[in-house]
Each structure stands twice: as structure tokens, then as C-alpha cells.
Image 1: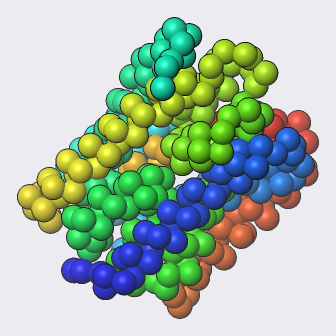
Image 2 (image 1 turned 30 degrees about the horizontal axis):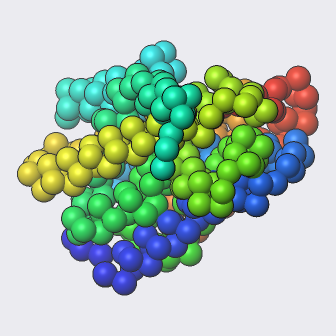
Length: 106
Length: 238
């Protein structure tokens, strides 16, 4: 599988601008603005929502159909990973534990 | 450039403070490297993405969209949503760095990551006269270099790892590890659960626009939950 070169470079350039300007938006002008609480909430909820919106279909959809059962190894491995992430706060333990469960179930 | 003894020791302290964080950065970088090449990026493109974007969670988040051939604007919107937390960091960091030159502020903006942000804000107040920017630079350079190196390991190792190891699943697992510290109160948990549920229901929407609907729904549910639970601490640093 390969990606059109222009798509890849446009993606890299656009994301680079986005990643830079979200980090620079107040630091670069030296702004002393305090974010209103509602704005701060939106800025906190959006990343959590986005990550979960990416993770959930990866775990619970099999060929586009919802599969919530112990027959779905990715779902079980993902739930174990959530438990490990909550319990250990370790990226390494989360990845390693989830992969081990996936391999065992497969 | 002549550095004072304070600046050198702040730089070294910052670098040392980043060392315990590497346990998380290394596997995450390797997984990102593998995932970028598995999504169809060339080695040069994947390495350039690590250097130019330098935002691991946003990079990992757009890869499934790249595989699904989603339109660029959906990928930009998704990456931006994941990066919005940086806007908060930027607002908190602005007074820390306001006396620095434009070039310094641009460099420190580019190099900001979640972990070094938390370490800096935990160690110094914004008006502390210590050379905080050297501390931040020391830690950030360690994180940046190790991230790029581990990402390169993943980029080159990815080609050697057989498909049936389903290593792309490691990318999902690392997003779970990154998501967990963001779930620090009930409202944000509601936001995430709502987004996950809507994403399942809208997975067949054209051009992956269901993902954006899921993010919007998550934010709306989170705001509603915060209104009913005003005791939730909305200003605590992640």
C-alpha cells in the first residue's frame, strides 16, 4: 500500500502547521490572556473525545460491523489495555500487555 | 554564546528530569514509526513527519484515516482536535517565556510535549527568575532526540516485521495509554464515552466525517456533564 506523494506531503505540512500554531498561539505573542473556563473545557474534552473516537471503532468493529463479545480478540485486548493504562500509567505496560493478550487470543 | 553556570545547570537538570520519561517515549516512538510506514508513507516521509509535525498522538490518530483514504480536511480536523490540548499549555507557558526572544519562543513552542510541560510547571512558578527556558530546553531536547531515534527504529524495523504480527494494533494500544491521563474527571470521561459511542454509530459515514461528528458530540456531552457537576476541577493541569 502506498500513499500519493502529494497527499503525504500536504498532510505533513498541514499537520506541522497545526501542531506548531496550537503550541505557539499564546507563547509566541507573549500573551497574558487567561482562558475562560468553558474554552478550557472544550480544549480538554476535544483531545480525549478524538482519541476515543479513533480507538473505539478499532476495538469494537470487525469488518464494519459491531462486535461486542468475547469472540472479538481486539476488544478484549483493548479492554485489558485500558485496565493496564489506568492501573500502571505506563505506555510500555499498556502496549506490551495488550499485544500479549491479542496474540494469545488469536 | 556564553552560558552562565546557572543556565548550564538548569539545562542539565532539565535533561536529567526527562530521563524517567523515556520509558514511555521509546515504545511510543517505535510504534509510531512502524505505524507510519504501515500506513503507506515512505521512509523519508515518515521521518519528515516525525520532525515537522512532532506530535505523536496526532500523528498516530490520522494514520487510520490515511489508510482509509479519508480527505485531507478530515485528517487536518482530527489532528487539530487531538492537538487542542496544546492551546492550554501555550496559555500557561506564555508568561514563563515572555521575556525571551522571538526565536527562543518559537523553538520552545515547537518542542513542547505533554510530559515536559507537566515537569516545568510542577517545578517552577511563571515569575521564578531561574533560567527556566534552559531547564525546559534540556528536557525537551532529550525527549525530541529520543523520540526521533525511536521513531527511526520503528520506520526501519517496520519493513522487517511480518504483517501477521498485527503490529498496527500496537498503535491503537499506545493511543489508549495516551488517552488515559486525559481522563482526569467525570465530565471528560463522559465526553470520551460519548465520542466513542457516536464513532461506532457513524463509522460508515462518507469520508470518515463520522469521526468529526463523534468529537463534536463528545465535547457537547462533556460540557453538559460539567454543568451538572460543577465540583469537577476544570483547571487542574493534566
